[in-house]
Image 1 (tube, rainbow, N blue to C red):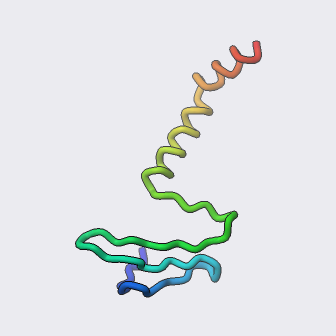
Image 2: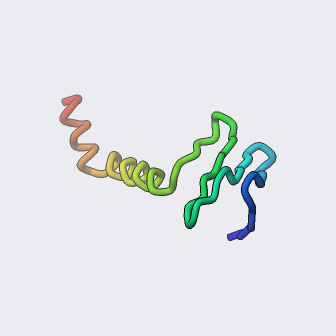
Length: 72
């Protein structure tokens, strides 16, 4: 993991097309602004984990059984 120090209004660039800017710092909370191409998905980690879990559940045996029931 790369650890960087940034101040308000400072930014970093990832892969020449993603920019992350520090917008605000209040106590222990940091507000980030992320500029990325539309084809690059950006999620909070907890949302990403929920999506992954839902995808795993959807392809489970129960999910396949439900699909079979749906189409007979």
